[in-house]
Picture (cartoon, rainbow over the protein chains, first blue to last red):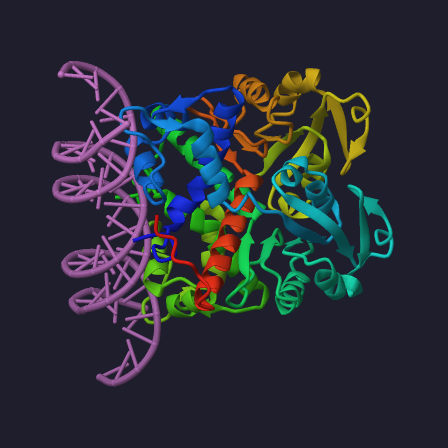
Length: 226
Length: 226
DNA sequence: TAGATTGTTAATCGATTAACAATC
DNA sequence: TAGATTGTTAATCGATTAACAATC
């Protein structure tokens, strides 16, 4: 009747970080309790969905009262695996790699950057965000000696699949991929592909759609029957 | 019977950039035609879904033959609004802002960076990716004189909502937001929130889930009935 | 013509919303 | 106790998959 077995749907999982974020903010503002209704208003969901989502886990709420913000936050924190620490490396120490290395938010949540790797001799040897940039030849050994959990791929797309293969062969736990390819990994290794370009294209789609709508409103639309 | 009216579902829209990406690769490899079945194999979708998705637009395919890769690519390119040029500014010229500024992929697709803005006097005055970093006080005017379409927000989360408001008041068309808040905009302005942190948390969720599964397999799982 | 593959309709599956009994 | 709000069951909605007639 519990956890191990029931598979949480991807739709729910993708909402969890959002709950985490909003609850974190409420916590900072010293809000003690919140009802699904109130939270739904803030987050722009239905109260029903929130209750449905949360009921995937243990019983978090209290009838007639709502949810204790602190408890709920901490439960979701744990569900997301944020009560652990993850040792990370970044492969590809270019602009994006450096940007991620310098992001304090990740460190704060337990993602500890242990090293960075590149092939460019101009970059290798530098220290970025307090961490050495090493030659990629040393990656394999480093993963073992430093017990790396997560590899962040910030290389050009051509290099990414090989890097991913190498990471998997080292039994890394997860890959966070920023190269514009859909990386695959064998069972046991989790991959999260980011695809900034896809996000930008979605934006441009909607801008264009918006333009059409406005033109339509103004009545200047030419019915483009084919 | 056509475009203007029918609303394309968000699920389909989010897949379009992926089609675009895969078709672009096929095009580069000089593949001339592809069937929904073949494409489904490559992309890891069902053939049925591909046909269903594409049938939202014009008739792209040819019965008994499949799809002409070049045609389909160009159609999707157009649907995504990538046959236009967008003038962009980046607000917040820190690490991430700089990384995006230096990304060649965006420029290649018609997203032209016109200027960058910051409040940090140490950064203002620099030139990044061939573009001036200006003081944020000049943002408003710049948007008008340079007909900016898209504002990319790379500021800390505290500054982001005010920046967004300002952009909206300038009648910008779209906002691409990297600050960890869900920005809202009035009708007419399109917002795409990226949330890298959410993506990372999803990864850590799945790593943790994977760990549980493995422990379970090995039979060491303690049934945690409540 | 026969074979292949589309576009589309119908069936299924999953996710969201509504409703309400349980209970704090 | 009365009021509030949960967790859960049932109803609805939307998205994916299957099937197949249309047709290149």
